[in-house]
Image (cartoon, rainbow, N blue to C red):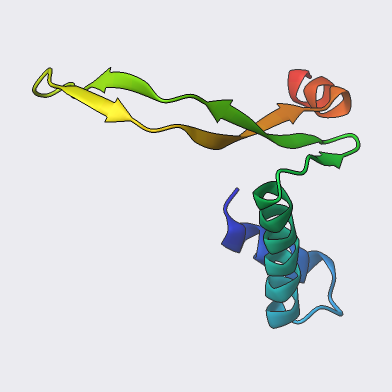
Amino acid sequence: MTKSKLINLLAAKFSQLVHKDAEMSVKVILDAMSDSLKKNSRIEIRGFGSFSLNYRPARIGRNPKTGEKVNISEKNVPHFKAGKELRKRVDK
């Protein structure tokens, strides 16, 4: 599902929400989640899953086209772990 599909679904499901309000709601939620991850905080949504950051140390990789060695810097990457309820729903 894309962000625009989520906004359209919210606007359709809640008739009192104008499309612009649904769009603002989704934006506020996603911005809050992004800000939380920037602060290295864990996000947990019960029944859905949790978001956290995984640290990846610096390493040497290869350019697949030329085979040349390339330095890859260290970084934090977002990680999602599905909750128990979500795993059950998807498995059915």
